[in-house]
Amino acid sequence: MGLSGGVDSSVTCGLLLEAGFDVEAAFMKNWTPRSPGEGLLICPLVADEKDARLVASKLKINLSVLSFENEYRDKVVDYLFAEYLSGRTPNPDVLCNAQVKFKVFLEKALIWGADFVATGHYARKGEKEINGKKVFTLLKALDGNKDQSYFLHKITQAQLAKTLFPIGEMLKTDVRKKAEELELITSTKKDSQGICFVGEVAIKEFLQERIKPKTGDIITADGQKIGEHDGAWYYTIGQRRGLGAGGGGIPYYVVDKDVTKNILIVARGDKDDALFSSGLVMKDANWITGVEPENGLALTAKIRYRQPDQACTIKKLNNEEWQLDFTNKQRAVTPGQFAVLYNGDECLGGGVILRAIK
Image (tube, rainbow, N blue to C red; front, top):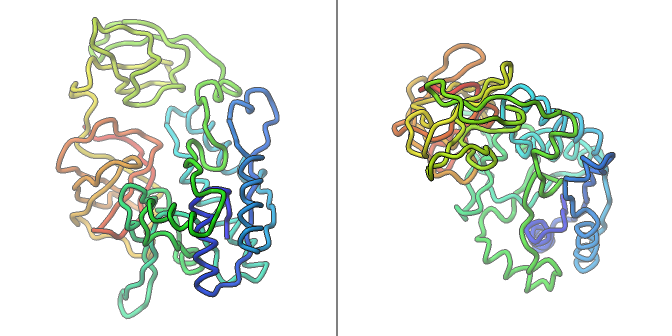
């Protein structure tokens, strides 16, 4: 059991014990700042480890501390810098799940002799038959406000077969009530925010640790210069704050950027058509059941976490790229983020956004 020191993973441990499992808990250490800039990532590591130890003691289970810092730096943090430098906006939480929790942590657990790895994610695991063969499915959590299937869309059949999501059938309010019943210290603890395993982060200041500022122009879609910025790579599509360009009471929003020329392109107001796209092209798709969706299939998609499902159709362009066409235009389609596909409550998988289709 990945015990993070939060209420969700704490209750998960309790539920597994009640279900008759022999539970071994593991607290993952994945970040130790090596410079002042890296110290900007506010990681409540000490407090979380203390809470994890108190929970393990209360539940009378063994707790091990595992360090995957090298893997986290190589697969998540280096990826974050490379994506920003290339002009894209990454989602490190998705990579953290794919490369750490459900890869190196799962591999370690299986070496230890575990039958399953469990996490405190709000998601559900299902089964169905495809061509006479049983496959596992990833389903949305019962609590739609807390559903985390978006972050889990890269999970594979092999990983899902060995994974349990015990709180996926519960509402968050019931999870906290269960924590109170179990007399766990985490029952009133606030949910964590920020980058997975790291915590809150001042992303621009953190990026400046490796990507140095460089002044460039802020221009409108029709080519008018309205100000200057300190590095196009620090900004993301749809961003409003931090531009330093006034719009006569109407704010400007980033609609595109050219990191080669170090230019930010902006639109005035959040209703400008330049902010919206009719579709997108994604790559590096993962399909959880191993079966690709049929061309023209009507599905729903999320292009960011917590976004309501958006109606779309999908088609395969080539061996690497897929196109999504939306029923309603989407605001701030952002290269580097992930488009995740759903058929009802089932998360089919998804891919990284390559470009928007206007």
